[in-house]
Length: 339
Image 1 (spheres, rainbow, N blue to C red):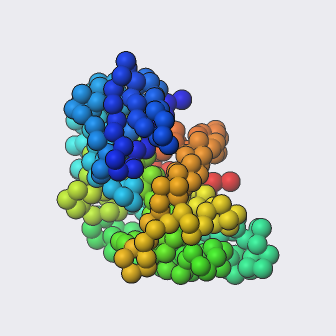
Image 2 (cartoon, rainbow, N blue to C red):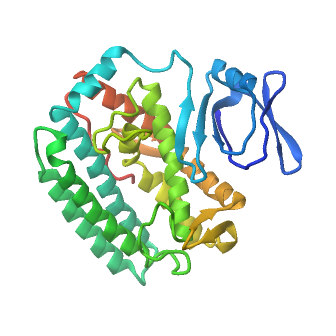
């Protein structure tokens, strides 16, 4: 299995030596053969030459540039990656008809059901807050049924209603998590730019790893990553990758991050900054969250009668979008809760 290399420590330099990428880590030189790499994620402050970039791309390695939160800002891919022109033409056309409506609904429905699933899963092992978590899970399922009933001919006619319902479900979900994550780490409110507490910082970083994974799968499938359905167009935003990430962030990102805090595997010493200026993971904190998310991506989950590694399922779902927009499949099925 090929590796994803994350290089997000300022001052590190990537070098090329005999078909290997080398860099200094912890006072010693690490080397990884190019043939073993699937993707390299690079943040600001990391140095490398054009020869390194060209060697990575020529070996089929995706190079993703990320910010300090791990959010993709750009990527380099092999010129032959991607699908046909027909896929992108149909993707754009589907925005204006019911295909776009169904896709946007599916992204929100999957995200909403996943929130309910996780709260009920957390309730199993927390008797002191079990009833509260199950009650909120039930309220979120009621919102899911409201989403089911929404309909329209074009996504622009119903996006705000979809987002309003998702926002209600998200607010209830995070409020419930405040009874699970220790108060010193989480205020009970989702904050992003910047994250105001350690839990939000960890969630944002983990979500960005999922976003990177969905971006890669969208590109490999031949879809236009900028042309989303639920997320509106915005310069520099990979909207379709954000759409697809909606289906996976709860399982791949939130579940392992909650476990890190619940098991005291991560603490205040793994963060820097302040609530006023923003709280961020330090190097060791990023390493812990990255390892937990990577483990989630490699887990096997059931889907349509088979078991799939989650990272393979993301690619399968991206290809499902392709089949749906090209009218090769009549449905884009709901991604139901995980266990």
